[in-house]
Length: 55
View 1 (cartoon, rainbow, N blue to C red):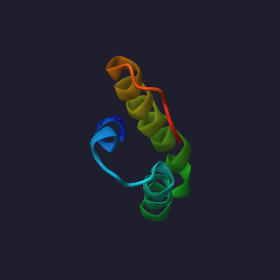
View 2: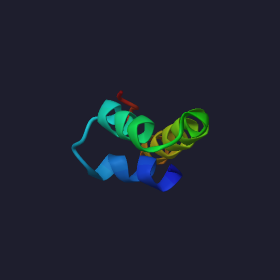
View 3: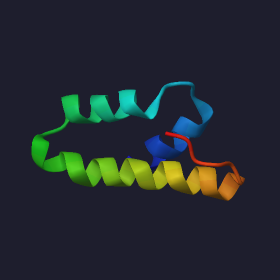
View 4: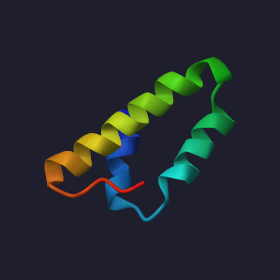
């Protein structure tokens, strides 16, 4: 999920759609951990690229 979050920087798909897909395809007990991992990847790519984070 961390790599998927990082990949988002290169794609034109809104984060809310990715998060909906995570929730739709994973067991509820895995949602929080995977959403956090996804967000971590997103934040680190935007941070390291010097780009302001946008949700």
